[in-house]
Image (cartoon, rainbow, N blue to C red):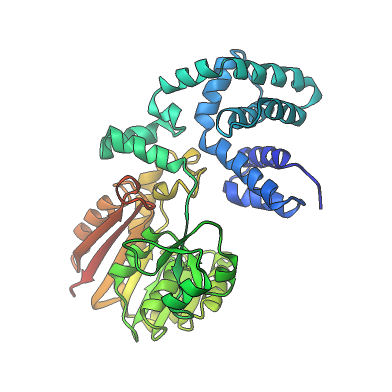
Length: 417
């Protein structure tokens, strides 16, 4: 294994993130898997790379204030790391400067040293200038995204949402009551704390490795259980989980069914479907049958068609993920204004393909982890307009600035004929 510093890994991860269309967490994890580091250094590498991505616009604002001439891309990544250490982590100036300068190519070191030392001298001025900037700069979000949130939620809530997205995400888990009851869980894991108002959900200070590997809990935010709760599955029923990977909702549905009945769990990605199988095995779920299928872009597999009609269908649709930006911190930099309507088109196609598989009086739940009306309320209105056999029963949502959990939306339909 290579022996790279945490700062060097963070730099390589940022460079790879610019070149590749992959999520930052997978890139950082891949680099760390190839390197020998202590746990504290691993955590530092994550903090540096994630922190820079959360604060890109603000860091670049400071870079432009410190150097008016053009900054080459390779140098910009290094300066971002140095300024993040100085202004956010409050790293000792000599350590932040010296270690960051060491990351630079020899010809870049004098410039790096000069800019970072200038940042130390001008820190009060730079912070004051940042405070005077618009929200999208101060909180490092795309301007179009902030403006639409201000329109939908109001200026104050939009600001709260942006700040929320820049906070480290707490670790929540769902107690897997197919393997352990709640009292026994708290005896085994006294460091866990119950989540008020969310029965069966707990919060941890650190990742509960033993509880996860033992199948005693599954890591998921409390917002993710909303869709399963309004699906309201019963033991003995046939359920279709149309977009199941990685399996958190699938496992909870099985728990609500007391492991009795049938769940057909689909996903278009065979690799992600393997993760579903692994998770179900660990959680002791016995009623899930997995199928690789891309709704609605390929014919319905005969095995699924033979199970229809289903009593209940969950469509946890692919979406923009704007409700979970705190966890998927680089999503904000990949979104474009046109994405919301293109997502809506795909979501409507999926719903239309699934309605025929639902039994009369059956329940269909459509859910997303998006905050955007194009993917939520507008989808509901359009599917009701085009599908007279559905009746809207209920809508529920989680808003970070109101509820303190990730953003989510769920709508419950009943098939009337």
